Length: 243
Image (cartoon, helix red, strand yellow):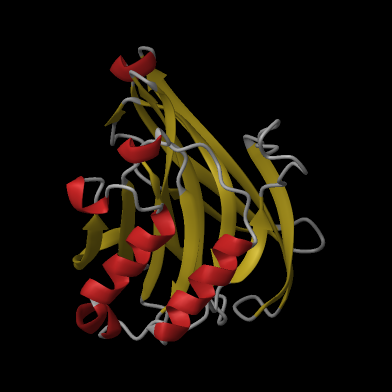
């Protein structure tokens, strides 16, 4: 756990902090057999001096079922106990408090995820937003499953009803995998387009990861949530087992 905390520290040091209502994403990685994937998001609920309250959420996902594992959901704050703590401190506390339980999943000390795609970040995050695209295309030059270079085309389909905090929305991901010659190898619909989330006004593709054996994909999604005091961002993932 000490190594994982150290990894989180260096990750934070390298990032420019966002506004108080925008979470930081942390990729923990895959279990040894890639049956589970873990990630966290953390931040502060306010930046008004003494009113700052840290929060941290850690989730373990069953990669085959694309569902959270009940025993792998950990949360801390925002509450009085996390007052005047930043997200990183709150995350450290969460890891320490649940060390015994979390170790049973045998996640690596440092992430073993292979990054296939990540949204481009602006040079000055305080003045510009990442370059989100509803559709992206990228290549995997060494996927063990296919034994050759393949191209992924990913599209996020959103369904939004209403506006602001009263909005109800859902989404799904359309994935197409092609060979170098352009032949379609696989097509998938990832996620449940019938599952609606209140207050979420947009879904943005942040990155796409896979395990080292190339059998599991993880799509990291930013949820843009409308609140009375402005917009917040939280992270979720959709997972896919390649057949």
